[in-house]
Image (cartoon, rainbow, N blue to C red; front, side, top):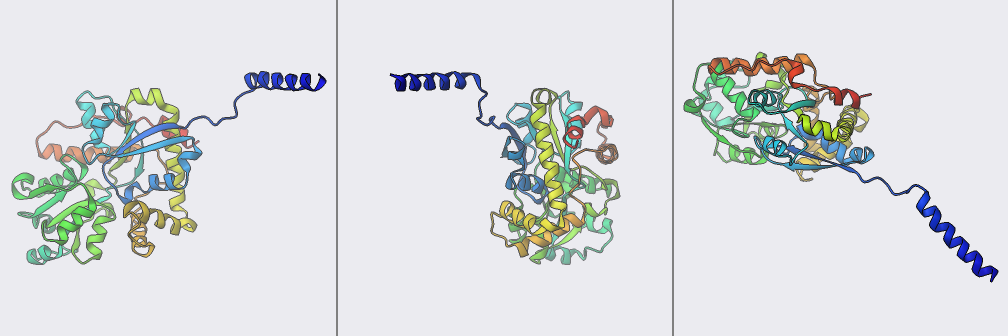
Length: 350
């Protein structure tokens, strides 16, 4: 009898404790949906954060959705994405149209997309990388040039160069759109296009293979009006920020940690391995990928902060307005505080 009573008492006590004591189960990870245009080396902070478990450490799950250039804002405004990869100019254009968007941070400095020209076409036109900028741009008259998407940052770069030297973007160049960098390299190599403007490491790949020369390097200040432009901002909406502030702060914090990891010289080989894995599906060796990572860092394209500063915002707005003025379009009349919400980024860096 005593044995049965003890067993009963133990079972009852267990049941009571189960109801009273807090659960030891882990809290489910919060989800962040991040829409981006294409695979590129500029996305390296996110690849590192994913690979090194930095999102997991923040108890968030990040879903990466590749949507192509120009398609990430429909995803954001329809509620299918929480945050998108964008240049800093597009939020101004959308706000001008009454859309509620705000930049909450950045993950790369300057233009990460550069313009390369077929070696064969360059020879026929008599231009080299060292030629004056005007001569190089004028050589594009009649050329078949690929950008990443209509209205994308690469499209705006081409429009600006054409307008700068007085020729018609639509009439004097044969512009096509190729979303993926590997496809652009293949098209140039096969003679289907004469030039393309795309992200790192694809323009470097075309140069390394002898298929192209660097025509215009925006990252190194060759176009003064664009020096400091923010091509890689993180953008959300006020509604999403209000509803999902905590998880967006965690997303930014993990991104900041990934940037520090990338800048750590002791981690460089690991960073190169991650780049090779995510950008070329492991088809490139570390030896092949290393120069591209080193060049990106030499060009100071990876920041050490996710906070978007006012100076770079102003450079970006003024660059866009220079083109709008030439094209006789309404100018973007926004100040830094109108577009940028740095509260989340500042909190992430505490």
